[in-house]
Image (cartoon, rainbow, N blue to C red; front, side, top):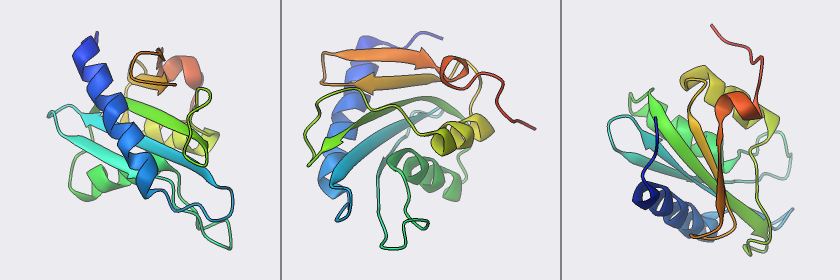
Length: 136
């Protein structure tokens, strides 16, 4: 499935907006995500840190968990952005845990959009980012 450029840019824009909501007093590394469900709904997420580190949650998982908690479990794409002090300097790929959570709910051709800006982005499939993943 091919994503329209307008859809990609909308997801990136929403992910960038989420940088404002990150709670990152320890790393100061803000991450925002925007997840497109098959039904057209966009679920957003930001990273949320905790002093104990283990209870921290990444932006991608925040978006997925919001959707799943509302009964939505089929997705088309996610845009992810991030950077120190909320400034995007480079592409910000999902961590391994987030890749595995995506693999739980997404097909191998699910699109992962990594962006430096609205106009500078790369699109990967989940299979490219997590080959040979664990699955049902």
